[in-house]
Image 1: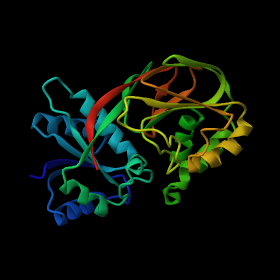
Image 2: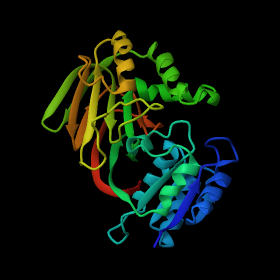
Image 3: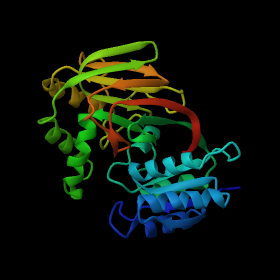
Image 4: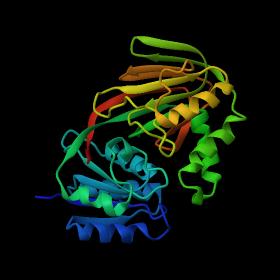
Length: 297
């Protein structure tokens, strides 16, 4: 028997005012049982998730991008208890990024993605937990500390018609004024101390509008794929084209670690982003929450 889905649509994703209607039509066309709610703010979205959990919902779908999924995951983790079943999460992509679904090669249009909600196949999925002066924050896909996090603000200022190209443009515009600084990373039994421009903490494989930043990452191994982008800024010009294709791991400026937890000492003005959402500033620690949810594929 197919699940009944608690669907939350971000009306600001995609073309304003269209995503909820498209999601309803697509889900009805696939005979998916659902209740659809539109969120008006991050706080309202969290309330909608809490309401779903309170009513016994176990299957949640976000209509939006990675930011919408990020908010739903954080709300699900906030409402988790020993008595609640492991929640199932689906994404009906409507944002300009929607990078997490690329790890599973899932459709990136609402209409095609809706068909997956009519089946029962799920994938156990880890979630990352970050802790810092900002408190505690969970993430599903990728977190950044450094220039990639700083570029979030620049990207948000760029016109939406640029689509996924906004992320690359935002990065290069930010890089020009972002200095390298000393960091100290401890990850498992290994460590790195030296200059860096960015640190990537990956659960999924893609970020920044389709860049294959962690080609070897898997969301169910209980491990982060951590990469320190070291050296002077000029090396970004040789590294970043490789990041797009996922061939950067062997570059001399990339220091890679695989570990279930980490501690990063960095400048207190270095920003931290998770799933494309700015969450605060460093230093930061993190750990994997293994199989925190089931992801609908």
